[in-house]
Length: 368
Image (cartoon, rainbow, N blue to C red; front, side, top):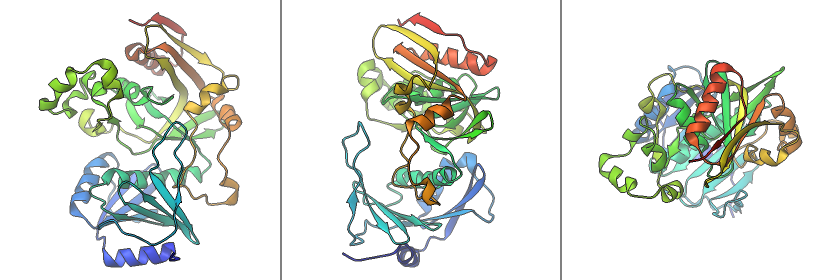
């Protein structure tokens, strides 16, 4: 196998497939410049990141995306084992002397990064979602190197009070977040948050990733319904709720198109963490405050490994935080468990009331 460096990779592909069109986006405290070789991808990303566009200026992070066919780097990869609860093997990687290469096995996309260099190589336009994810991993890495914890959650804010929403697989954290958007909230994040203690307060940072929702979520929210083409709506309306829940079909729900401008920010106080732990049955929906130091069984719904795309800036940050560390951090905010039967309307009302008043009353209601 060939031994290659990240620097050699960057030099070769930036020369062979020049990326000359620049897009600047501001993600909280940094400016990222994205240089793109394909006009179609540029236009797509320009609309996707519309809430975060910045004027041309000096950037903190440079990412280049080079449109070409899938390439064989002739290096020895290691397969990334699936996350707990998952079965598909999607990625393989190789640690280089000056960085790392990650290859997406289904698409052939290659991402190389390290020492401040970041490059995407392959059929970028066809796999724009993977390019977007790569851009966001650069921001996540930046925040983790500032000392943040990584969380698996959506997030919204209203009346100055931020709410993170976590849940075990398939619980509907994005659906609940979008219900709250329709009640006037502002979006903070769809699937990842970076959390940091600030004195006696907790702050969380979102990721510029637009929600990807299934048809059932869109059909039950007038603000989201327009994303389903008219010719497809009757088909989805004929499907049972149970089948809609499990449907793999996804739509991008761009916040600026569904809810208007200035409704997506990336920083908020984390006044509460809601953990969805409910079931699809007819039992009572129970909403109560819990102590994370005593209910560590709930915390795997929120904790997240840093993953392949994180290179720490010091050896002290190599290990992921443990459950004890997360519990201590979350004890500085309000943690709410929602269990029993699924009831998005009730959960949204309680969460909205919390953000409006800053107080919470435990609730039990029969799920109809």
